[in-house]
Image 1 (tube, one colour):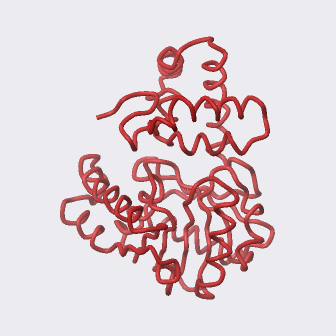
Image 2 (tube, one colour; image 1 turned 180 degrees about the vertical axis):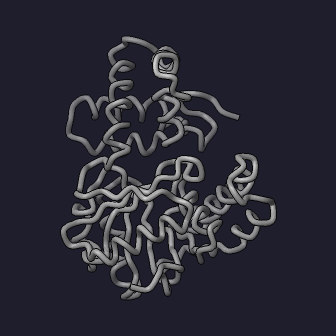
Image 3 (cartoon, one colour; image 1 turned 90 degrees about the horizontal axis):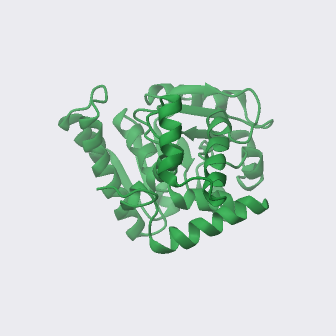
Length: 286
């Protein structure tokens, strides 16, 4: 199978913009797609910000010249057919909602070139939940990025029973060439490796808050001091984004998850406090 060079990222939110910029920084031909011109402009602004972050965070090879070159290598589009034209790899990074993803894949299957590999960045849905909508289950798998991809540079790769081994290997190769450490999963597992470890921590923190056991600051402080971790669970929530946390909780039938979704909606989502992306979530940011 020919190597991947032309990449389209669907969704330019917090993580989608990072995925697109990371690939462009490592020399891939990148197109960033979102649903309308307003969303595309917001995504462009995120990537312009990332260019500065790569320099200040001392990412290997990052200078004002190389980060500007990466920005100039990104094409933007709000037309799906145009965005995926000639793509070797299409990475989906839209909200964690099965209905939204299904509608997108059904549209994508009709307009994407035959050679294109499809990859979902979903953190909660299994690729088997989505493969039936793609029109090409043998060319579909999960490629899951951690937030702050230039530092936490893992790429969890998880296929289904239908995924062509050559497709899987092509995505492993792409991950390596885009500055990531491939984490190859041997079978499907909800939450992959990272979220199988992280989600129980976040759920436990949410439970402690909802039950009135301790406040946000106390829970985070306890975790940081007792484990030596740089951040606590609610700081992680803010980085991940409270919209994502809400979507995941709202999709669960569990009573505790529904209570957490309602809490987030009333106290944060409805007030525009979505985490670091908006400057305020559980904490306030400059």
